[in-house]
Length: 374
Image (cartoon, rainbow, N blue to C red; front, side):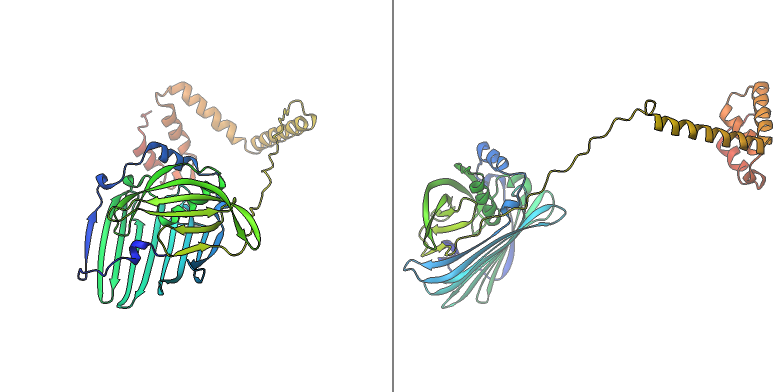
């Protein structure tokens, strides 16, 4: 759903155009090492537990249903990397004004955002305001952030560039969904501070804290829920805080944004997360074989050895010229005693080659090696 700072935003006074800004390192909030290590340690080997959907209704403070909220997380290969396709969409009425938010992102298993598109709109009496923010990892070393805001006929475009090395500890709206699910499923909610961007692309701190556990009524049954408090310290606005409660397996049950005139909550008990279990790979122990002690293998070996020897002897009997060739060669070696035996051997046996007689081999041999004159 729309954030309060977007609801309170005024129409842009800047004419159509595009400006490019480089986000410098001094603007990035300092992230302590403890938070970075926690972000790394919370990643599990089996992340299939993150692949499920959440459906919540949006209610006004008076209890009227005014909208709906949906989250889905699905696995896929994106840019040759194992990723999650994270989608979140909310739509409804706030103070009688139609508004909505939609996020479509690709996040890898390290919770790094590869691409994310975020679209927000609100229909005011004087016209609709649209805001679109696209975050892309253009290369292995740089992110680009394209922000477009349209108010009636005016459009303001901004392009931001930031080095990937500065994005350590960055949590986008999409990776935040995965992080919170991991916190709940690991039963490990610690006080940490990372960073994100506000609607004006200013880097700002985002902190997470544990809330007291409680119960929540769903379909006449009180179920235990676990809470996380998330606070963004905006540069040009007051901090914004969410209190989100989850079931023990990570389903979002209730979400409240402090100062926001709406409450998100589920009205149906979510289905338990089921993950297919696979049997461990069967490992067949390799049997040690000693063929000399195995009577059958030794018998096969001796039979085959005798067979090859007989074939060899038969071939020599069928080609008596081979013995004469070998005799001539050995006699030449002993008589001439060449320094380069290999070259001499090539020259000696080249005369028996069909390629030699067709003048295909000798020229190349004479060029490749220096054969001594006899």
